Length: 120
Image (cartoon, rainbow, N blue to C red; front, side, top):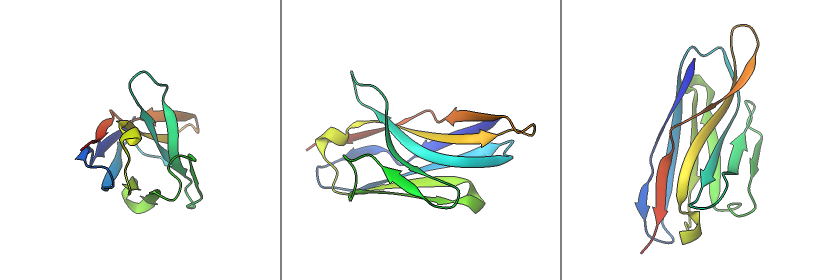
């Protein structure tokens, strides 16, 4: 099985920056798309950004031009650089990876989540 461990969340003032990291470990055969989702209280989980193995990216409209997703395939790690943070970015951020097992079966893996709070 593959596990994802996130780090980098915390409390930041509006306009500030944070960088989230997510490292995959375990029985890694092939990791495809990796991404970040978030869930605010009382709301559904939503896609923030995703990146393919070759580096193609897509972003939610709410974070375009403020957030940047990147990955290091050699380290099986994905990052989310968050700039110009707003109070509405407050949420639990979850790392996601679509991976394949030794039999070629694909499945989603989720991290445990990391809290990001934007407040003065």
